[in-house]
Image 1 (tube, each protein chain N blue to C red):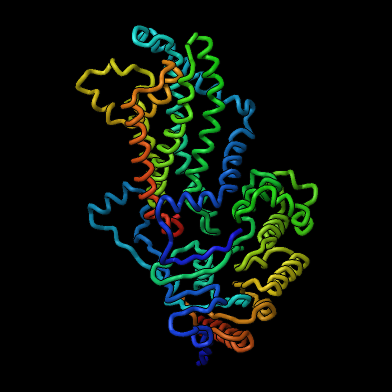
Image 2: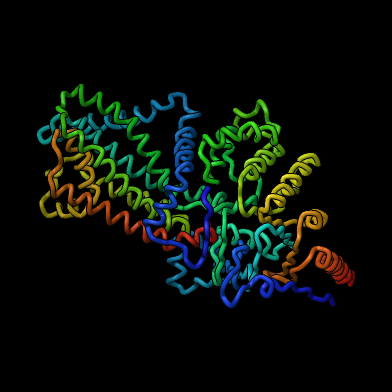
Amino acid sequence: MISLITYNSMTKTMIGKNQISDDIVIHLKDVNIRYRMLQERTTSLKEYALNWVKGKNSYTHFWALREITLEVEKGESIGIVGDNGAGKSTLLRVIARILHPTIGQANIHGNVIPILELGALFDPELTGRENIYLNGAMFGFSRQTMNGKLDRLLDFAGIGDFIDSPLRTYSNGMIARLAFAIATDVDADIVLIDEVLAVGDNNFRKKCISRMETFYKKGTTLVTVSHNLGLIQKLCSRVIWMEHGRIKADGLPKDIIPVYKQSATQALYDKSQADNT
Amino acid sequence: MKIENYDSNHVQRSLLDEINSLVKYRHLIGELILRNIKTRYKRSLLGVAWTMINPLLTMLVMTVVFSQLFAFDLPRYPVYLLTGLLLWNFFSETTVSATRNLIWSSKLLKRIYIPKSLFATAAVGTGLVNLLIALLPLGIIILITGTQVGLALFFLPIALLLISLFSFGVGLAISAQAVFFADVVDMYQIILLAWMYLTPIFYPLNILPDKFKWIIYFNPMYYILECFRSPLYLNKVPEPQIIFGAVISASIALFLGGFLFTRKSDDFAYYL
């Protein structure tokens, strides 16, 4: 069996009994997230009413996160690893205050910029420029502020003459670059990155990684979800390993990543053994 | 941007705080209104003209059909009708698009935190722009029919404020339900149709038999419509009891809608 490594953040960062240090920017206390699904997926009020009369509105509950307690200090770079469905993205959504904990408490200090899917905040019918304004406004910036950033954004994204064409004429790479440029040209306290570096060519990836390193140097707190363990090893000062909605291990990359790798290989081996028999 | 502190156990849920967060995201409201207007007109040949032609055509048809019928009660029938149509269109378009915008933004709301009442706000803003554009042909009709207008026009902004708040409240209430059940919009549109016939838009109040008049007096849109119509059609500030009814209607809609919406808005991301 694989031994569990648990990094005890509680003793390190708690001052006194209930007082939380100023340096803690993400504080999750016993956070549980429950998705509720109707057994027969009822999306209309009519069906719901009919089923209610028949007493058939039963739910299945799915706990995407269970008893997550986590403290992140300012300036830490956290990598989250785990298999698909382990709750990594759900955890990011809690930190981004998109999902409200079903049970538990989340305290976040500072501005959060979530980069959960590049280009998802764009409108394909609007031009690149209009999308820059729209996307900027979602982060709270005026047109004036965005105009000041325009040259930098265009340079990073390499869009040039396309700026006044509708976004639907852009290539996926251009959309990804533009979205990443807008989201990272911000003085945020916390930046959340969900598997976005999987898109784009090598050149873009290099640019992105250097951006993230700049964040790290500036003291921005980074939380990165990725299946790319090399990237995690390179960028993160601490790794959280999630499994079935729980934190399985929490510690230094050099301690966690080899064990995680081994377990992933082990799982693959077990599966092939099972398939063979 | 100011530093934000978020505590999931102490999320502010009152209407006032919702309005506060709307102020913080005011740039986004502006961008959404602009986008709504642009995408509406971008691909149509006549562009902005549609906003003006559409109610005019409806007015023309209905004038042909009804003007003889109501000639005795309603002189300058086109003005009476058009004021009613414009206000009703504003109300129905705004409330339906508040709901549609929220549902369509599900992609957005799963990826970034945005105050959710923003979409109803943008819908009201878009409706106001469209209404202001449509006031232009109304002005022309007022001139053609020789309707007198005067200082009572200064009451018009108050009427617009009342209908905006009322539509905002109803939009919040409907969209909060539509997140959970997709057919709420369809049902609401049926209600809208019945509601339209129960509002004196194209007929005068006194054609109703006395025993049915109470229905009209329970219709909030009656008071708000009178507030809008009085200055334009009668050159008069509406009666105090009409203004009172309109203010009460708008307040109830606002607080009820705000309550229904903020009570559930934390859960939207789970269902959208």
